[in-house]
Image (cartoon, rainbow, N blue to C red; front, side, top):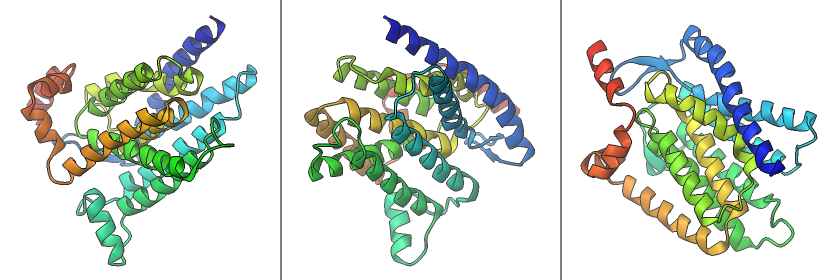
Amino acid sequence: MIYMFLTILALLAGFVLEAVVLYFLLNMLKDAGAVRQNYLGKEIPVSAGISFPLVTLTAYLIYGLCGQYELGFHVFLVGIMAISFLGFIDDMLGKRDIMGFKGHFKALFKGRLTTGGLKALGGGVIAFYLALTNPTVISSISAGEIILDTLLIALFTNMLNLLDLRPGRAVKGFFLFWVMIVIIGMGKIDWMLMAPLTGAVLYYFWIDLKAGAMMGDAGSNVLGLSLGYLCVINLGLIPRVLILVGLLAVHIYTEKYSLSQTIERVRLLRILDELGRGQVYDKSAEDN
C-alpha cells in the first residue's frame, strides 16, 4: 500500500515537473530558432522531449532526499540521458536526405557518418550498456541474453522514433506498449523507476495532440529505450524473444512500406491514430 502511494506521488511529481520544465523550455526553443515545420507546414518547437530525462533526473533527486532512491536507477538514468542527447544532435543537425537503418549504414560504409548513423551506433552502444549492466541478472546473465536484450532495447528505441510522425502517435504507442508489458509481466513492474517519466509523458500528451511541439528524437528515443529496458528487467526470456520477433517484423516491413500509409489504410489503426486530434487537424489546415 505504501509503495503504491509513493508511486502515485512520483507520477504526480513527474506531471507537475513536466509542466514547469516545458513552460520555460518551449519558449527557449522558440527564441533559439529550434523550430521545424510539421507535416502540415506549421512551424513548432522541436526536441521538446529533452524535458523527459530532465524531469526524471529531478524526480530521482527528490527520491534521494526522501530516502527512496535505488542504485539500480543509475543505469536507467544514464541510458535515457545519453539517448536523448544523441536524439537532440539528430534533431538539431540532422539532414533528411538519408532515411532508415539501411540508408545510414550504407552511408557509413562509404565513409560518411550521418547524424542518424551516429544515433544508430550510439544507440546500439547504450542498449548494450543497459543489457550488460541489467541489475536483475548481472550475476548470471549469458552472452545470448545480452545480445537479445541489446537488440530489444535498440529496436524499441527506433520503434517509437518510427511512430513519431503525427501528433500524439508516439505517446499513444508508448502507453499501448506500456500496458502490454504490464499485462505480460502480470503487474510485477518496477513502478517507481518509470513513474516520473510516465507522469511527464502524461502532461506532454495534450501538447503533442494539439501539435504545440515536437518531442523529436530527443523524446521518442527516451520513450522507446524505456520500454525496452522495462522488458529487459521485468519480463522472462520467452516473452522477450516474442517481442523481439515482433519488433524485427515491423522494422523489416517499414524498410519497404510507409507506416503512416499503412495506418491510414487500416480502419482501426486510423481511428486510434486520429483519436483526440481531429479538431487540431482542421484548425491547422485553416491556418495554412
